[in-house]
Image (cartoon, rainbow, N blue to C red):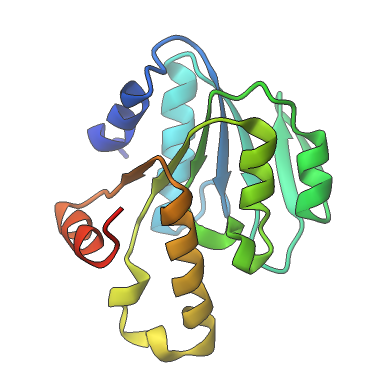
Length: 171
């Protein structure tokens, strides 16, 4: 899979030209889902380009799995995770809204601890999905808005997604 030039271009916007440390927040790497595949490919491509990437995997109601220097450590809460993070990151990149405070994902704690910009890759606009009336998706809608509000840059892999987002969430 080729990583979108939009995704890689976002790093240039923050002048992440030299090797820098990036904290990458996603639900999983690899697997069969589109977001998971994009996450894996993006991490690999950035590492090839000299960036140091630490990864946190999380899904609501599950532990936080933190990969630092190739080793995986499990934390049971966002507070435990944040206590282990060192303020050495130049950027946080989030792929999914599961880290929103409304899902007890600790995004505010992470950003307060690290004092660095946030890039959000928005793979879909929850407000435009047909099943938004389900209770879980109402929570997801709130979480996505929260992540968009905190993001310094929002990347949309498609131009249609960007147009919808710009209309629904003027940022």
